[in-house]
Image 1 (cartoon, rainbow, N blue to C red):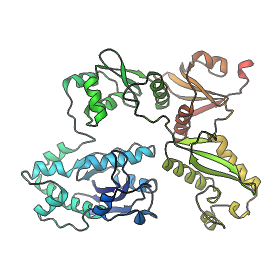
Image 2: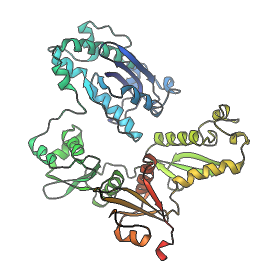
Image 3: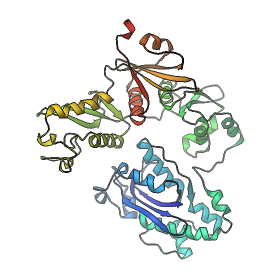
Image 4: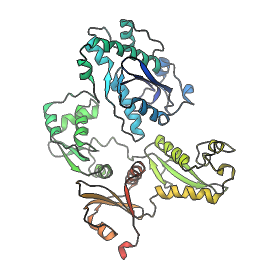
Length: 460
């Protein structure tokens, strides 16, 4: 099964483009059996040359869904499919970047019709979609719009399938990312690396650390550095002498360790990273009628957020979800601007706090549960997760709302008070980044075990 797609974007800097339109046709090798076509609000300006090329402008996108609103449909229609596109490297990168902003790792096998056409139909003067389809007599309507270009790709791909009589080239053309082209020196380094979760350190010949990263699969991630054509990766490939690593057992400790050690070591190729890993926060305030309101805003350093988010999209997605799940008021949470009742009230998913039908006490009680769940302030707890071996677990200590550090312990070892914890914890720095990492991880991994501690255990 194939998912043949085309994406139109805003243009702009590499990995900062936004999607303006997407079209996906599910193709069984004979005919289209499903489709998804949608304009997308990129929440950023479209480059003028793109407007001229596609005809898509900001006015057209004002009421279009944002990417997080269509993400589930994209996952569903491409599930168990090989994603086909004309220049699949571009489309796949754009999709992976958008999903990464939502905290989701999007992985699909891909096929590129440019590469297939070069193999199956050699000696063409051009392999651009427009010129190639004209040369092959394939009719195209809606050029430079997602639906038109995606349908043209469907027709081209059908022709390519027919020409590949032995099916050998198509099998060999399937890829999961950038085609491997790695020199023996780098290949030797990769072969020595594990496929486990941890933090890795890329060194120059003099031992200097030039890059620190984390991954669930160290070997795969370093291999990506060594095969990428991005400018930073090319510089790393020239300078690397060896790669060392440390197992962490789980992604949370890998994230915390990576953050701490980048700040301490300041590797030259990590300096391009943002100073903080979050931009928006969840805040609360009491309105003039006594109702607790929640709001999403940029982190400003003056107010302490309840919890933080990597970007506005993930923050908006979170507050929308908890509003629906807890039957809170869209109006009070800033999701529905109105002087009267919110939309959810009309469909009986809001109890009427927006028009004072629900009492302040009842409404605020539900909001307080959300705040207490996600707020670290004054909490003392241990987050238990996988360790580096089967008989080991990790422990991350939060004391009075402050991240103290992490450690590992054997399953036979009891950790039931602060005295025992202090003996196994490696002390780490508490800052906004570490708090964001922990809160963000807990939001996405709801099965993680949390043991609450009494703050005076240490003195018992």
